[in-house]
Amino acid sequence: MASNLIFYYDAISQPCRSVLMLLNMAKISYEGKILPLFTGEYRKSAELAAINPQRYLPVIKDSNVQLFESDAILKYVADQYKVANHWYPTDLAKRARINEYMSWHHSNTRQSCIGLFRMVYLAPKFFNKTVDEKQRQEALDKLNKTADFIESYFLKDTQYINSDNISIADLLAVCEFSQLIIVNYDVTQGRPKTAKWMQNIKSTLGNVYEEAHEIVYKYQKEAANA
Amino acid sequence: MSKIDFYSHLASQPCRAVQIFLKMNNIPHEYHLIDLPKEEQTSEAYLKINPFGKVPAIKDGDFCVIESMAILQYLAAKFSTPDHWYPKDAAARAKINEYLNWHHSNTREGATGVFFNAVILPKIRHQPRNEEAITTAKTKLSAALDMIENYFLEGHSFISSNDISIADLFALCEFSQIERIGIDVGKKRPNIKAWRERVIAKIGSHYDEVHETIISFTKRIDLSTEPFE
Image (cartoon, rainbow over all chains, first blue to last red; front, side):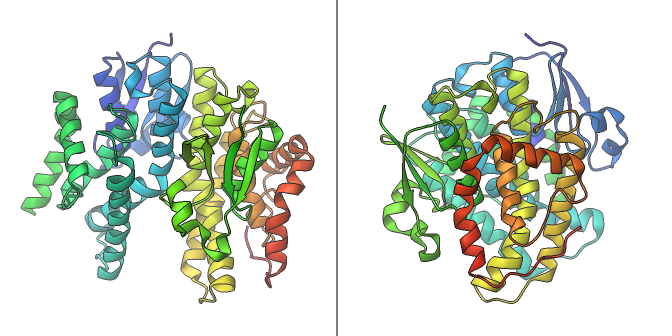
C-alpha cells in the first residue's frame, strides 16, 4: 500500500473539495499543503509545477505516483487506499455507471458551472470585467440544461448519481453546485430530485462537508455584504 | 458470448476511438449507424438508448453505457483485453486516467473547437465563421499540444506509458479530425510526430478503414487548409 500521501489544494477550488472530502470521509492519513489560489501564491510553488506543469490544483503525491486531475485522483485513492466499495464500486456494471457520470462531468457540469462562476464572480472580482448580460444568459441556459439532465437522467431512479449509494461521482458534482451559492444561484430550485440528493449528501458527509465548505460560506457572506 | 451493440457515426472522433478498440481486440459487436447528418441521434428510438442524444453508445444485452471513455473502461474490463489498454496497476492506471480527464477540456476542446468553428459552422450550417471562437480554440489546441509534447510523451513512447492505451486512441482521433483541414500536429513537435506514427503502426489496417467516413465526408465539402502553428 502506498504511503506518505501529500495533497496540494485550496478548498475554494471545487475539484479540490471533492478530493478533500473523500480523504476525510475515508479517514486516509495525508499531509495537506494549502496553496492559495485567490492570492496567486500557488503559482510560486515549485512542488506544484513539478507535478503539474500547468499548475492546476488539486495534485497528489505518494510513494507510488504523482498525479493531477481530480477525477484521476479520486479513482486512484479509492482503488489504492482500499476505501469502502460504494465510493468507486468494483462491480463492472456499477463502476461503468460511475465512470459514465465522471466522464460526462467535464464538458457539462464542470464547464457550465465554472463558466458561469468565472463570468459573474472571478472575472469581475479579479480582472474588473463587467458582466455581459447576453453572455450571462447563455451561460445560465447551459447550466440549466446540465442541471436538468442530472435531474432527469443521473438521478432518475437512484438516490445518488447513477447509484443507490454515495460515490466519487457525487463528490465531483456536488462541489460544482455548492460553489454557486457564492453567486446566489441555487440549482435545486424546481429540481426536487436534485434538492433531495444534495440534502442526502450533506447528511451523509456531515461535518466533513461543513468543514470543507467553510471557505465557500466565507466568500458567500463577503459577496452578500458587498 | 453475445454481441455488443455499438451505436456510432465514424465522422465522430470518440466513435472512431471505440471502433478501433473493438476491432483491435476482436470484440464481437453489431454496428448500428446513427445518421448524424439526418439528426438520428435525437430520434425517439435513439434517445431511449442515450437520453443525452450523442454518439457513441453501447448496449451489452440490456445494459447501456454512454460516454466513450466509460465505454472503453467497461469493455477493457469485461473482455479482459491486454493490460496495456487500461492497466490494472493502480499507479499506471492513474496516469492513463490523468490524460483521459485532461483530454476533455484540453485536446478535445481545442481540436473540436477548431473543427466545429472552421468546418461545421461555416461549411455545413452555412453560418459566418466565428473568428474569435477559432482563435480561442487554436490557442487551447496549441497549449494542449505543448503539454502532450513536453509532459505526456516526455520519457514515454506513448501517452504516459511505454505501450499503447485507450488514451492514445482518444488523442489520435481528435488529431485525425483536424488533419482534414491540413493541421499537422507533429509539424513543430517531434515527440508528437513520432508518437503518431507509432500509434498508427500499431493500429495497422484498421486505421484507414475507420477513417474512410471522415475522409469521404470532408472530400465532399470545399475545405481549405486552416492556418495553425
